[in-house]
Image 1 (cartoon, one colour):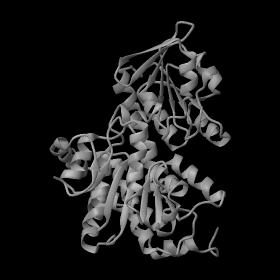
Image 2 (cartoon, rainbow, N blue to C red; image 1 turned 60 degrees about the horizontal axis):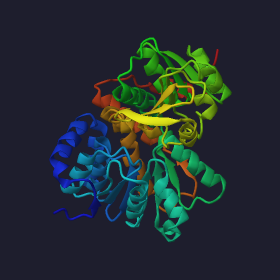
Image 3 (tube, helix red, strand yellow; image 1 turned 90 degrees about the horizontal axis):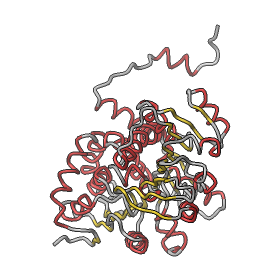
Image 4 (cartoon, rainbow, N blue to C red; image 1 turned 90 degrees about the vertical axis):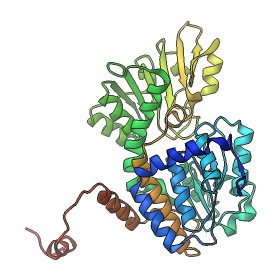
Length: 421
């Protein structure tokens, strides 16, 4: 029997999980190199780390890197539906890492698992949505002083944490891993773009070519979804509340309009805002028969689910991950994945080659936080630029791409004000 505590679906899935973790590891050369260095230098010796992340093959390789560096690691799920049970089993049985996560767990179990991760009394927290940090601040405040720092992976979590900083209630330093350029320029744009469309297609088998695809939000995630949908032949409409992003979407060649205007036009709707109630009852009532509704944001609040259920006269489940609602008009609306992250519920999340950079940021930011212990204030920090540059350098090297180097004269010129026309 495993020596670590755990609550997972089935240990018998461990062999399958190990194969999948190793498959992902092949496409994560940057994290693999960091893991090898961690194993030699042991930067986390004596450090307890609690992580609340999507339990996937890529996450497993981050946990391996942290453990290789000497950390005592506990992992729980950041979404009740995104856990890959075979991966959870392998982490427990093959890698001796405590995991509390079961795919499809109910809300009580989900929060009990987060409590189990907090009970680890972490020195570092690693979050995707700030649930660990929120619990420590709300009900386990006695742990605040022992936490060196927290790391946050996603836009939604960073929004919550910046609000806590603004209100003066943040109890320990946060490194916003999501804000690293080597994370959001690639993970959010290319990862979410591909995996969200992948999830929609797996759930519905819909044809994108010729369809009208409505994307709510034109941040890095939204523009990634918009680009991929357009690349597969969709006519893309973008919804925005930010004038600059709306203007950028328009100049990128997308139609931009309000949700009310887009509601009767869309065949597929995908939210990616980090906000709440983006699609509401008045929009559902205007949607065409057969419209598909999905979410690529972290929490399942972007689609007003109570309003949809109140509006419907009946519902059914014609396919896995599809709940079809019949409206009083007789129209049918198809909600995917219960409004949760479509790319992780109906598909496999981001490709490993993209998560290689995201989790390299997590690993190096964790090392930075330990080295800076006691020197950081209780505020939200961006990832240090030197970490961003190092990850980009390692990724280029893994791709066998070489770039030019500035000469001393070029460097002097770029730093000088005296030489001009």
